[in-house]
Length: 174
Image (cartoon, rainbow, N blue to C red; front, side):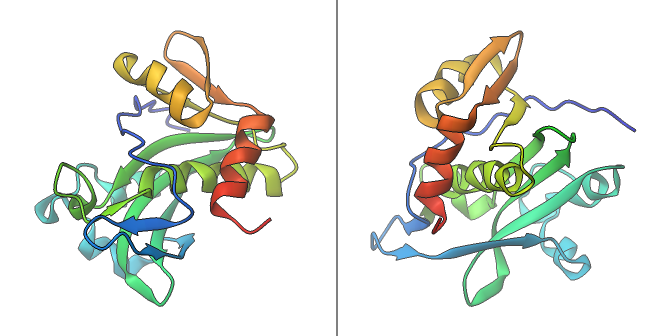
């Protein structure tokens, strides 16, 4: 298995109940599903995405998931790559859609939503919500504050059950 360890470099703009439109303030319920083959044509570097998601999905033991607004499954708001390590989920890569980052982003709440999804996957598998990821140095404190993640050395971060449950409850009706 290829063990590429990306350093997660996404800011948690706001923890919302779903995602919020930055112009109207309206909240839109979301769903997360596995990315479909037909989606890859819309998530390319030429269309402003930073990572090669098609290549990411081909890596062994990884699953790529897309965040969409309910009723609009063809407009991807963000993507996440996860691995099931049999006692927790590892978050390899996360990215908001090009129209959802920067100062003119259309929706806020995408990164928090995807982290909550990773915690929910872990919870649903009986791992108590444990997830881990590798963070950029400059964002370690940010993830501790915004997600309740714990820095365990080097760049490694873990979201433990209490923090995971807070995220899950924020984004999912459980």
